[in-house]
Length: 331
Image 1: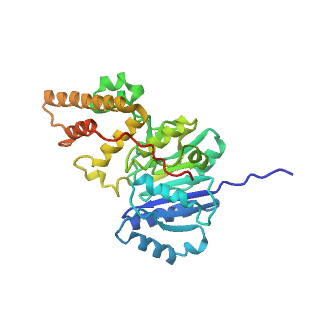
Image 2: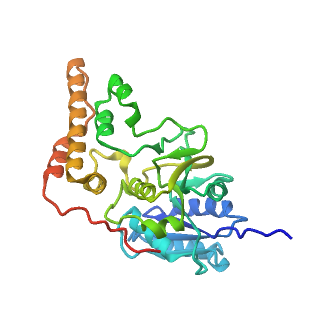
Image 3: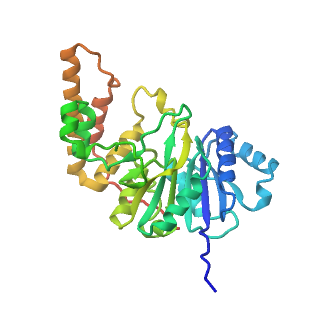
């Protein structure tokens, strides 16, 4: 008689902030892909304050989702950002009260395609050293999204902002965006729009650091996982359609919001120290200055957002408490 392996319990966490219709579409796609899996769906409204929670609750009730015991709609109670909202869903556990073995984070503007969720779970089951598995993202316009990355550092800041071919070739090992992978394999970090994590990893390193309101939180999580010996892999067999930047409004920014500067500084000070953070900012400014000089000599208008560099400099130099390693709550 041969033994059987118990399938992992999977908690799908779907975070909403003022996009209830899109969240419901993502929920429907997730539920289709959860068929045959021991999985539950936790929809978290991140304190939208616009009636989203009530709309989601009513829609889930009308569609019979709540009666199955596989779906829960919960309210976070406060908008602490992407990490805090997902942490709330992770702490909730499975809708039926069980503890999950795996957590799958799904953005409200992301639509899992056939086999995508199972592909992540199967990959983790076959690769014991992998703690985090992320999907291949593609836009609804069929354009691949670049979501396979190296960890950022001082050299990468200079390369990114200089936007100069010879410098990119010289510093190619430090370019943050990796070439689009064609096979599944290891990366430093990837986007949290479709990310599956072992609960064993979160038990070891903690949840998302809630000191990041938005941006750099996935980078920080993958970095802490790597420091603890867990790998992050990019899974090409898991395809998810992603609109991107819907709830943040990033596509209409004139310059990054304050929380982008806060998150960037927090990441560098946390992982590189105060001196390393200042060096990264100096490299960023140096690269931007080189690009600005090229624009001047070629009489090309720079696309740098007005006030961005001066604000970045002031933000980097101002006194503020050292980064607190929040990672609130062990699941």
